[in-house]
Image 1 (spheres, rainbow, N blue to C red):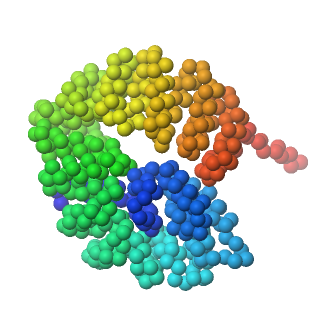
Image 2 (cartoon, rainbow, N blue to C red):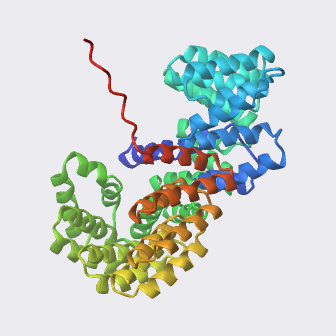
Image 3 (tube, rainbow, N blue to C red):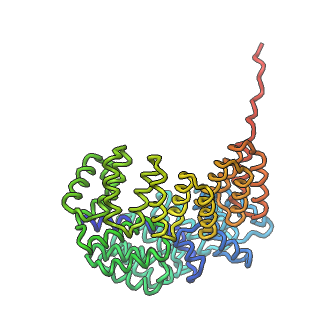
Length: 504
């Protein structure tokens, strides 16, 4: 396998992690499915809670709800919630299967799954969950046997197919895994994660598999990005560019990485960069971590050999900036901007450099240009607004941040930026109100933490905790409830242990 192929295959495994985590919850294309594959966990949680409120008997929605809470770090809260729902006088297999899925500890999870299986021996979700615990704890033979039972009960169970294939891979049985992946495609073509898995295992068949997958599931960004990377490796630049564009249009969780790869395709097409240079840029972090001098030498060579590459200059300038070599960094970042006048990252990197150097008047127009170049990026919108504030135009900064909050309701960056601006201008009440309103719109744990942090900074911790407690009750969001309880405990005075009288 060539170097670029190895690199992109490794990345393909990485983007599948999220997909495989939710493989069992294969819904038809809808806003919930899209939010999950885009990595928008808060939006996903909001949508799945609405689905449960509409029908509390929706078992698949409850499973997805548990997976989302667990993925966000609230497994314990989910386990307590679902354990409390089990009716001791009339327990159900579904109820215990949900407890098992929520339990973070292997032993307690297995016990819950066994309770479910004692009520219904062929419960597919309980069998799949039990097999997953076996696989996670290294009991691959038991996992394979249990996955087989789950598939006998539900042949379309994508999570069971995925787990079974991965268990055989762990055993070193690559051909068996490949054969099973083919069977999974026949049994569960509705699940995009099965297509990604098959493409990862069968590298020769991957292009054809992903072409079919994107026709079946054109709304899944990971399928397009996986196809783009294979086309990249095949020097099929026009097709790769199209696939990258389709992936990025769907707002995937690895959007920043895709932007870099898409920019490399453009430079290769334009003759500004060759494959060697592209490989260096893609792997520059690993190279720098292993040998910084080697990375610097490689970039210096590339600037001479490929002087038209803005990406080389951008990467080189950012590394030099991080090292404190500001003169050389500025030279290369300016060159990157001049070579890539339509690239938002080139404008923002130079703007961030000037902002870091306490030169906000120079930073502001650069960051504003970056935000105009990529108007759908909340990070750039916040950076431009904060540059305006640093330059002394707080009125324009506040207007820009409030506008960004309206344009990007799912992003916490504009809210945090506005909070910081309001605090810096002595408007503590407005800062607390801005956070409170934002949490009502979209309950983010990060915003809850920011609310308490702001309360501490303003010496109004009790008020911040009261607000958070009220928000937890109003929204019913289990994350806010857990955060409220935890922050209350963390903020309370430490009780001193009783003094013991020494023995006489």
